[in-house]
Structure formats: C-alpha cells, structure tokens
Image 1 (cartoon, rainbow, N blue to C red):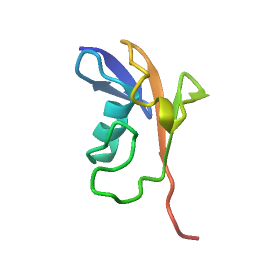
Image 2: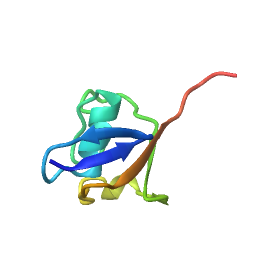
Image 3: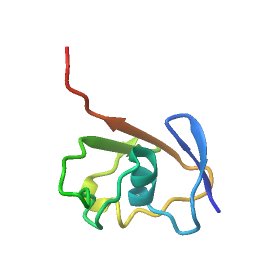
Image 4: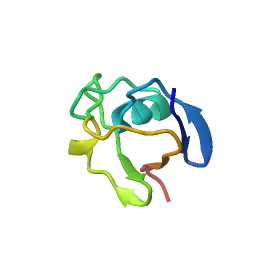
Length: 79
C-alpha cells in the first residue's frame, strides 16, 4: 500500500491507486473514470502532483507511488 501526502497529511491508499482515488478519498465522493461526480453534481477541485497540475482528463491515468505529494484544492464560494 503506497503512503502519499495529501495536503500535508500522510494517507495510505490501495496498491495501484491513481489520482482519481485520492480525490475520491479526500472529497468523500464517488467519481466516474472521467473525474466527474457519480451523483451528477459539481466537484470544483484542482490537483497538483509534485507541484505540477494534473488535468482532470489525466486523473484516471496517473498512478501514485509511495511518497508522492499531492495538493488537492477545493473551490468555495463566498466573500
């Protein structure tokens, strides 16, 4: 099981986990392979792996390795 850092928190994910699973784990939402929420709602999330933005179109293809560092940022409305 790889251990990755998500927003400065050590997190264990299943072997072969991809960015998609890390986002689902962090947001608590089920996602389709395209990165869209399975419930049809909006997600409003951006992801960086080792400081590089990972486009949503690559979430399901980007496998995570032990020690990887992810930043997962959620957009919020308000002032």
